[in-house]
Amino acid sequence: MSNPIHVVCPHCDAVNRLPPERLADGGRCGQCHRALFDGHPVALNQPRFERHASRSDVPLVVDFWASWCGPCQMMAPAFEAAAGRLEPRARLAKVNTEEEQGLAMKFGIRSIPTIAIFSGGQERARQAGAMDTNGLVRWVETQL
Image (cartoon, rainbow, N blue to C red; front, side, top):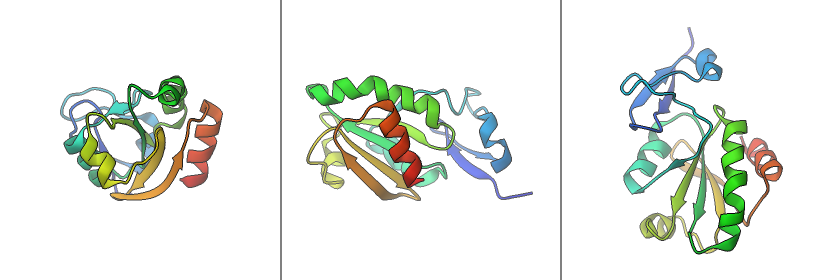
């Protein structure tokens, strides 16, 4: 049997162990019993971001955005649709830079929307600017 994959629950943030061959099945959280993947981005604050970025073996694709940003608002439906297409190969998340200024500063977010991919707690790729669903999915797939 292969080593289990760690997946952080998008609902209660519990760390779950899942056999790699069962990742495509999605699975349920051992703590809250909800689906580990539901096809929707998860909203992250500082503590939740740290947990999802550092404790999950599933790459984390983060949309750094703000409510006043027109391109961010235009891209929001595309990001939502991309979650359904990319899970469980990646977890999609959103960080509101107005509310989480510390995270924006930590990662040097200078323009929004900015999409960043994290794996093993480290940033692996970054793309600034709005994208449509297909462009976003293609870009993420080339980075995984």
